[in-house]
Image (tube, rainbow, N blue to C red; front, side):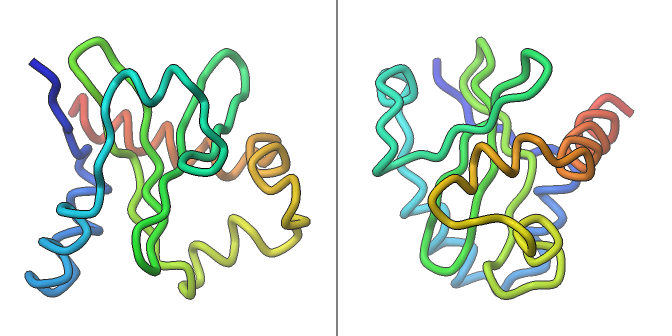
Length: 121
């Protein structure tokens, strides 16, 4: 069975949104395991660092950062494109190589680890 699991941080980010928007984002977040293996840059951004791999999926004005796990996927972050947090991720990134640049940002990976730690606690 393929599961979509939100860690505590991403669940909190979703819970802060209006219910109707939450439902819209979940409806539009269509991800199948075989699609992740194709690495279609039109559908998913791929961010890699230190052997870790995250995918970025755009839904409406939001970016959903997630990772493939044996059970399905774990969602780490749900960020609006016009928020300060998203700005911090992307402020100095050139657009054509944003995923490569983002994967090199230490702060991005610290936020991902923070989400993993929150899930274990």
